[in-house]
Image (cartoon, rainbow, N blue to C red; front, side):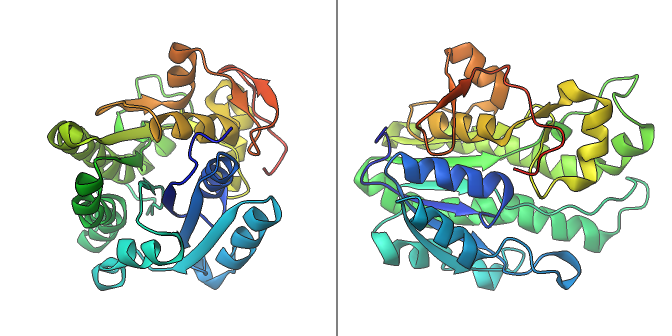
Length: 283
């Protein structure tokens, strides 16, 4: 415990799901966490709000603050790192977890749909990294973690699930492939300054309350699913170690380093990289 003491972490898409799990795990290790998300989800539905996410971390004994921001808007995100530095001090860690997807066939994806996905999934992470890099270089330390996806790679034939599912994820996966490439290039540019940039993807599906639309796929293919704790533990390693330009997958990273998977409060060892997901739960 205490691996992130005296560090400030900005985590986007942090009101629920993977982002909130990472925020809770980081706070348990001593980080002051700034959660960023839009208060409203798709179709005007109120999802896991920033207020409740921040309150949860505080109830668990962590230091947390929230910033509402629509990352699809360049002007809205233009000063986000500066804002995130106000509650607890300069940002040492950025986890670019927020992402957006339009499920559409690659032959039919419109310019507007593609541009929207690239803005959230590629341009926003790059913008936030560029905002933070000057300060990180001056301090001689910093960690930037971009959350990627296995959809960045074209699935092999025969497809694990349906052909349609493989086709629909193409446009989104293309944005993650671009993010992976940018991550590697940036990592090698700034590593000599003590700034470590990496990407992390789940092996396939992380079962959280925000993943209901893929729960049936996970039930049909249980080995494709993983608990959210595996992503949180892998993210912790990449945000306090000296890894350079990894495009890592959660289970494989944990297994290769012999790391245990802990509960989000860090107090309990749940298992190892093979820890199964709860297919019926809504963590």
